[in-house]
Image 1 (cartoon, one colour):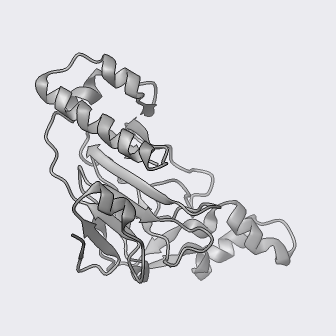
Image 2 (spheres, helix red, strand yellow; image 1 turned 45 degrees about the vertical axis):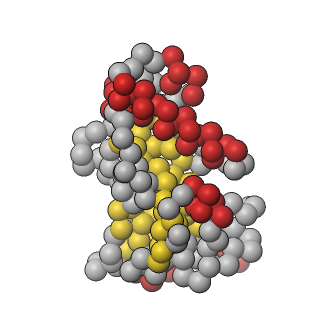
Length: 231
């Protein structure tokens, strides 16, 4: 059974089948299956050998881990989530994240994932994500955010970077993904997506009837490594 939240852009569902079948429509561009997960996900994070700030975890590697009963329960949840998303036609990736790389090329306009942004695809698709441990992703209502390239001060700085004819400026913004980033209003309601929940977020693609969902990766305030499924 679906339910609309007080934030008109969010719809909640009670099963994975509803999550994949519920369409985006009207103002709704974020659909969440809210779950309370059992199991010890921190045990899995602690036993995986990290290879950098972001370590991709293969299902085969999960299966090789020697785990407690709670760790095994967490593993079964991860493997099942990966499997059902693959069966849906998605290509999920499970990552352990210490931190993301920060964009230092444009100090006045970082384009890393800590910035509020929308995803874009040339074909119809959605972004699925779930945080199992650590700080969870955040979204902001579209009406409470402004596309950064429309902010005069930022647009003027971008013009200084652009070396070409005026007719190509908009293409320059798109090619460098500047048009995908947003600035939340000072009084914007930032919505935390929570731990354990699987979310389907609308993507900017041809024919999409709704606005793309504006979201960002969280700063690692908890100090925990983040265990994230995304596709």
